[in-house]
Length: 384
Picture 1 (cartoon, rainbow, N blue to C red):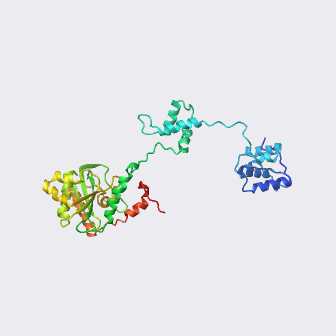
Picture 2: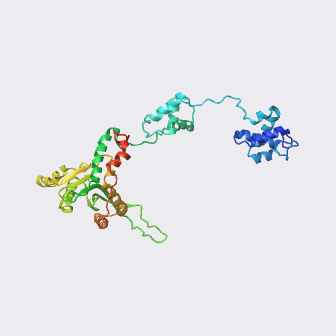
Picture 3: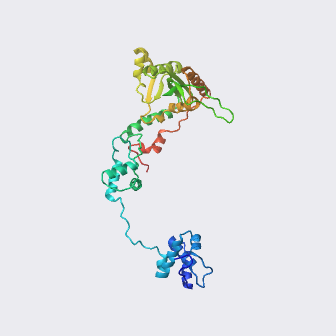
């Protein structure tokens, strides 16, 4: 049909009223409302206020010009209802490429181990494997992706559990011992000391860094020289607000035993017994004292030491770990070139912290754990 000639539409009063009602009906399908507006604008009868061209109608309603022509022809040939309703497909829909059987294959592949030499399943790898196994000979990666997405399968993601189900009883038992320690009233004769270990790599500069200036950040070269590693021993008295940090060349049983001797004989010489809270490292036990000192000396130290261990997977229960984090952020988060420089910086940091008596206020109690961590308790008594 040319631009100059077109079959004209003449609407009656009843036709216009019906179409106007549909076009204003917010509950009608969007296609039906659009077709009603097209017919109203196509009307060239005496009740129409303006004659619109197909191009003007298409531009006004944001549709293609051919769409306007098809709606007009359908109205003239078949009437109002066929023109307003969506035209049915003449051919049956194409059957989906992924049926129940092939979807089960895709799910099984996602849940199985990937081929040798591959760390994980990717969508491309799944598509290639389906074709290779003749499950589906022609399929795109985007079509394959629909099945893992629908079934919430993420073969590239691995979640790691922190506490195995079979280990819950052991965890909560040891956790409550630690929580009870924190909630016990502080005693000068039996102070509670938390300890933890860390390491610091010593790094020297290859080229001197450029100091910061207004409008210019500090700059340092990407290259550096490795100057060794120092072991850090952190001892914290959370009630007193005292801590001591030592750096050593190693962290063997001998090193730990010597740190314990210093804790008992120099830091707390008047304490009848020291309650030491540490992690489960194999050097943190009485046997290390007997490996480092003669039996009488080891026995003397052991009688003044009561060791408690944080549960495995529960290092967050150790306040010394928190203090190490503070040390790292405030003091060690930079390049330190030598052991002497490291010792100077650590001594200055701990002096400042001890002068301020920065305490650790632990507020999480056993009763809190039984409420907030009740999912960890194998048998939990529900409130009536």
